[in-house]
Image (cartoon, rainbow, N blue to C red; front, side, top):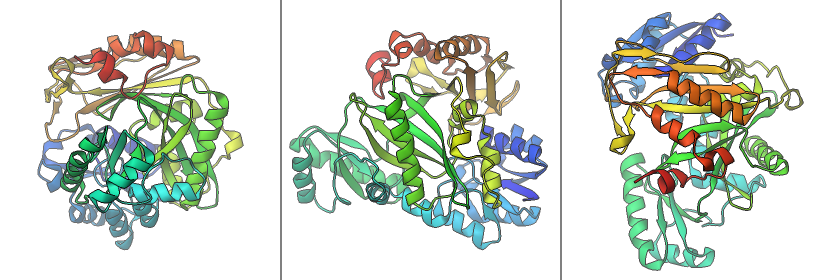
Length: 447
C-alpha cells in the first residue's frame, strides 16, 4: 500500500482524496496556486506545496512543478482528481516514468479512449451500440457532404478531442454543414490543439445516461449502476441522479452490461465512466469514456455503498477489488446538485468573491462535499463549482423532498449561487415525472 499520495488538484475533489487517504492511513500532499493559499485542502493535507501563480497554466497544469512537489515530499503515488491533468496521457506517462504510481488507467488506455473517434471504433469492436456516423475523421468537405447524405440530416459534428461541448455543432441541412464544420474545427483546434472532427446522426432531445465502472488488475470489472445526467445547460451538467428515472429494467441491465464490455475490451483498469445517450424509444448509443473519476461520482457511491476514491487507491496499489458484481446492489435513490458561484438571473455569469456567511445543510440523508467556508474568497481563475450537495433516500420522491429542504437550509452570503435555480428544477412537473432531456433546461427554463 502507498505511504504518501500527492493530489494534483484543488477544491472539493482534493479534500475528497485527502479524506480517503486519512481513512486508509496514507499521508496526503496538497499542491496549490498562489490564489489558493487559504483553500481548505491546503489546511487539511499533511503537507502542501505551492506550484505557481493563480492561472491554471502557471500552476495546476505545470507538470514539472507537480512532479517536483512529488519528489520533494517523497510521495509514491499521484491522484489527478478530475479536470486539469486528469485525462492527460502525457502527464500519466511522466508520473510513471518519474517513479510515481498514477492513480488511474494506463497511459495507453487513456490515450485511446481520450480520442472519441478511436473510442467509437473500440465500442463497435465490443458490440456496444454507437450512433450512425462517419467511419473515421472527416478529412474534406466533400467527404462530409457524402457522409451526411448517407446518415441523413440533421447531423452532429463532434471534435475527436476534449469535451464540454467545444468543437460541437449541429447541421440541419447541406447549406449549414460546411459553415458548421469550419466552426467546429476552428473551436476544437483552439481548445484542444486538435481540429479533427467526425460526424454522427443527430439524436434530438436525448437523455444522458452514464455508467460508473471500476476495474482491477486481476480481471474483475464491475459497474456501480447508471446515473442520469440529463439536467444540463449548454452541455454542462447541473443535476445528476441514480438510478435513472423511467428507464425500463431490461434497458438498465443492457446499458450497464455494454459499459462493462467496453471497459473489458479497452483493457482498462481503475475508475471510469462510460457515457451514452438514450432516445425516446429507450435505444442507447455510446458517446465516450471519461478515463477518470467524475464530479458526480458521489451518487454512485450512495446507491452502491462503494467508496470510489478508496477503490481507486486500492486498485492502483495492485489490490483486488473486495467485491464482485453479484455482491453489489442499487439501494435507494441519490441526487446531486452542483452548487456553482454563478448568477442564474444574469445568464449564469460567474460570481466570484468573498463568502461573508456560510452554513452547510445537514440532517438524515444529506452529504455536502465542499471546500468553502465563511470568510473564504472564491477566486475567479477556476471552475465556478463551490460545492456538491448530495442526498440519498429510500425513494426518488423522498430524495427530491430532502434535496429541496437541504437547498433551502444552505446559506451562502456574499456571492450568488445556483441553489435557487436547482430548487426551480426540482419542483417542476417534468423533472418530478422524469420526462426531462438534455435540452429541457434551455427549452423550458431559459428566457
